[in-house]
Each structure stands twice: as structure tokens, then as C-alpha cells.
Length: 398
Image 1 (tube, rainbow, N blue to C red):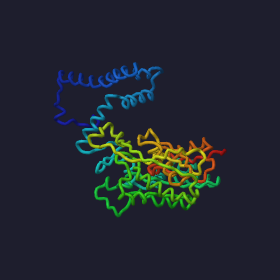
Image 2 (image 1 turned 180 degrees about the vertical axis):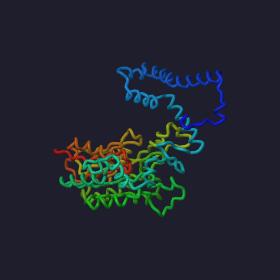
Image 3 (image 1 turned 30 degrees about the vertical axis):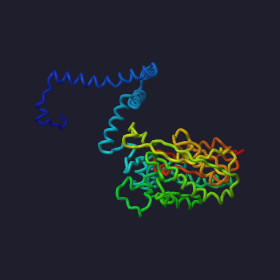
Image 4 (image 1 turned 45 degrees about the vertical axis):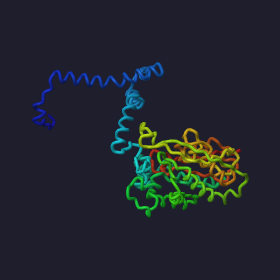
């Protein structure tokens, strides 16, 4: 029997007919309940059952697997069970989930960012990834951030435009003591170990690199520089970063050209990390946070000396879908400080490549530009799923 010998207990085990029948009934009911519940739910909501779409063509192994994954993902019953389970685990042991790490004092963290702070150097990690995919010698490999950044710097330099690259620090870098109890404050920010080698490589190639990490670290005594339940910086963190960036840009763009006014607006919200917690009610363990945002009503306009390429760090407080207010993002704060127009081209989650791809299709965004500020989350340097394509500039600028 393939070398398997049953134990005496298993050898003498007997399952009666009644027990076997009961187990079969229970098993059958457990299999039937989820699709039956989903059928009733979908018929009430849309009048149709999504599973029927599987039979519009001959089912294949791939289509059956896709249908199985869709059922698991979209099942209303499964979502309710996950939420209940997450709530029980959260209340019992303070445990997050596969995406969210629960820190101290009501702070939530994105788990990938915690891994970046404590994990291997991202430069060697990217190199291993390239070797693993077999494209280590491919000149078009999309996993080399240094190569992509240097290439973009050289393209812009040929057009007479200055590139300022800003790797924006993520939350665990600035709040390591909320992740690891006893973290020594004199150790400074918990940046990934390749922070300095990365910046040195870029500067050796002539790239203007601006790191605002130490400015944010020094401002922690003034208040919270990151939102407690969100991956993004607080208005204070944004203001500190905008001050530093504006100081860096001022010699490049010259004196203020027009007055820019702002107004203070209070915004209350939970955060993207709380939404990742599969429905934990905010009022139980995590209270919504109220912040004061400096809004800049003036439109940035297309004719601007500064273009910001970025991701949700640039969009936070300026894009309605992020639920933290409008007209108060990075571009608005830079315009307020510089007294010049600032144009923003930022895509949530797309700071590494997507923003540059959009710019390639929109040559008008480079009109009269003196500086391109490329600011993206440092997490993109570590995440192997993020592409760092070399993207050409638009061929024609009106």
C-alpha cells in the first residue's frame, strides 16, 4: 500500500451508515448554500445569474478556473463571512490580514511597505527578479528603476527640461516605533537598506534626486505626518514635503509670478487601509480622522513651468475619489509656495510608469516646461510587480 501502514485506531475505525449519511447531507448542504445564496442575491439585484455567462461558449479549463475565482471573489456570502472573521480576529488578538499590518496606538500599515522597511535591499531584489525572469541582459527589462530614471533624465535634458526625482518615503519608514516596539529613535527613519546606494547611482548619472525623508522625520514632533488609517501623508506631512520641494525648485523656476490664495477646510475620513480590512467598522476600534486641508481654488492651467508626475501621493487631498478633499494636493501646495502655475499628471498607483505613458500621448503637457518633478512612492522600488519601463517623451510639443 505504497509504504503506508494505518494505525491501529484507523484499522479498527468503522463509520456507520447513519453517520455516513449525515456527513454526506451536511457536506452537500455546505456545497449548495453558497451558490444558492448568490443566485438569490444576484436575481434580486440584477435579475440574472452571472454563472450562466459561462455557458455562452464551450467551457474550457481556463474559463472554468476563471469562473471559480470570480465566484470566490464576488460571493456575497463569502464576503460576509470574511468580514465577520476579520472582525472577530481583530477584536481578539489585534491581527490584521494579508494586506494590512496592525501597529501600535491605532496605526495601520500596508504590509508590503513594512516588508520593504525590514526586507532585503531593493536593488539586489530587482536584480534577482530580472535573472529569475530570464531578462537580466535585456536592454528593455522593466524591472530596473535606475535605468528607467536615468533614461528619462537624459531625454528631458535633451529638451532643456530639468528632472527632479523624488522617492517618497512610505509610512513604516517614518513610524517604525509603531511597527516594532522598542525601535530606537536615534536610528532614524527605517528606510530600506539600499536608500543611499540608490541615490548615489542616480546622482552619479547626473540625476537631481531630492529625498524629503529627513525633513518629515524632523517634523514628527509637530504632529502626525502620516494618516493613522491610510497609506498617505497627513496635511502636515504634505506641507513639510511641499516646503522642501519648493525650496529646491525656486532657483530653477525663478521668482513668483502671480499671487496664489488658499483656504482651510476640515475633512473627516477613515482611510484606504481601513477599507482593506474587509469591513471592520471604524467606530469599534479605529475612529475616523479629521484633518485640516489647505485648498487652493485657483486652477493650475496648462501653461505652467512645472509639471508633477506622480501617483496617489500627489493626488491625495486633490482628487475626490480618494475621499480626503479637493484642490489641496501636492501640485496645489507647490503652486501656493512658488507663486507659479503647476501642472499635475498623476495616476493612483501609476507613478513608476503609467504617468509617463500618459505624458507620451499628451505632448501639450510639456509646453513651456522648465522642470518635471517625478514623485512616486518608494514602495514601487521594492514591489516586483511594478514595471519600470523606459518610456520615450512625446515627439512633438506644441
